[in-house]
Length: 508
Image (tube, rainbow, N blue to C red; front, side, top):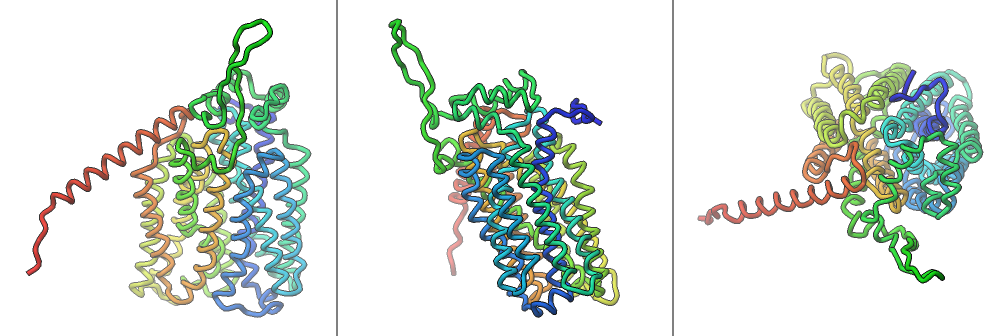
């Protein structure tokens, strides 16, 4: 088997490091797959009592605000300590939180465990793609950076079917066991990251540790030609790092003048400087709206959605939830292979239109009272549409948006801007996780219309402001953003002129 010419029977170290790093996505996916089924298990509700829709939403979403806050600091942590250490610290904290959930004797302890879990999740998850981007040759970066997303889908499957298996236990272990497994895997991943991941050579280069960076490239097995191309794309161009590097003159003892680079201190607020501001704002918007499409509302509350559509049996709704996770995993594989062929802009816009169409279809069926729990084709259309939604999302927004938010940034702002974008993602995720059960309890169609509307707006915004970046260097990306902003301004000016010339009809 080959990955674009790389023999996988004896893969270079950058491939194995990327695969190991992607296991962090598995932890996130497994937690997402566990929480929905656990909170509707009979053993869980008998332990903590049945919760109203608002409380249910708060319990599920309590992981997300801490994750949002900690993700803002993830870039700084990874910049100061290095990428592998930042990942390891976050994974260890995540594991401690999962252990607390599994050992909870009160609902408050369970929620505190989710909060701690969220802190760790925010610290490590955003750094995964940054790290893989920095250790991979440009030709392999697309497939490898989709690794965490692929492992997220594997984690979803593992989480759903772990709960499906343990749900047959006639004790509290039916809901505790999944968290015990998750905590054990988290501690294992933290140790593997700390001791097994080599440091990013670009992180070393940015700190002037050139000899160590060369050794890191050699350890990773990246050939000199790919190293040079990677440096050209991500570090060398002064037009990209003009706020971080200046050239100064000095006079040596031989009387000749030399020019040498002088590095200024890189600040978090560099992400809002003029040369990268538009890219930062677009990444923050897209990552937030990725969640407002409702994907985690579907994943967290899949059993509720299928029950609402007519699968009254808890076993049937659990099994349908697990099948949806399998579908997501299966379609993510071709998305991983072909993500660089489809292009970021096209997959985001077309994917958004497809997602909004399925959401509006489901919402329309519920609003028209065409979905009956006991009979009729409406419920089967809803069930199939949920699967179609997950397929379209997994083929488009799940992959492209995460890669796009990281690859459009120069080296000096990549970690900080990516963590900011992930913070937006977590905050939107909190709103979705909190509001979905409330909306479902009050209106069977409201949640679908909300998610469909947000997705449609995002597709329009991306059509106006999002340039294609697939296969481009940072110089070309900067020029593409300049060109796109100029075109957008020209379009808005033309629209204003048309509106200004439109005849005004006087009221009678």
